[in-house]
Length: 89
Image (cartoon, rainbow, N blue to C red; front, side, top):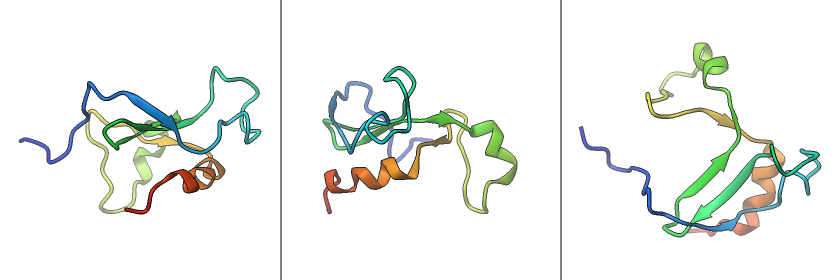
């Protein structure tokens, strides 16, 4: 079945949203920290800890993770810091 939305593999990274994990004191280095990036097509890329297996036995009703998807977690402070960079559309 064709999906209504899918990743555009030719999208380019446009800009970081919010602050780096190091700026938020959530990482001591830039090599292993979460990130939030806007792509040039308007989609958002998230780098976070893959917790798919650890959370799989307690997903709430209505939440499913596709075979080609992963559940990632980032610090809440990082998402809140990105709020000014996210357009109200």
